[in-house]
Length: 89
Image (cartoon, rainbow, N blue to C red; front, side, top):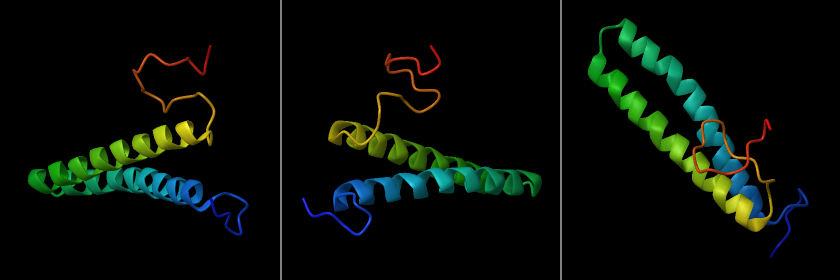
């Protein structure tokens, strides 16, 4: 595995980048949903909700890949119901 200038291998860096952008987008889309709902544009609000859900799944998939690569600890994203360890325990 090639190691980039960050000290992380390129694949790990790439997964972290995709995960970050998916999570950031999900945060931003919440405002887009509210804007569309406030404008009475329910179809557009539903579209933004769908995009937000897709980014959430994308971020979770990155988390799983990073876990397999040893790049994360054993915690799961909040709301995960996979039966993994409870990080608050």
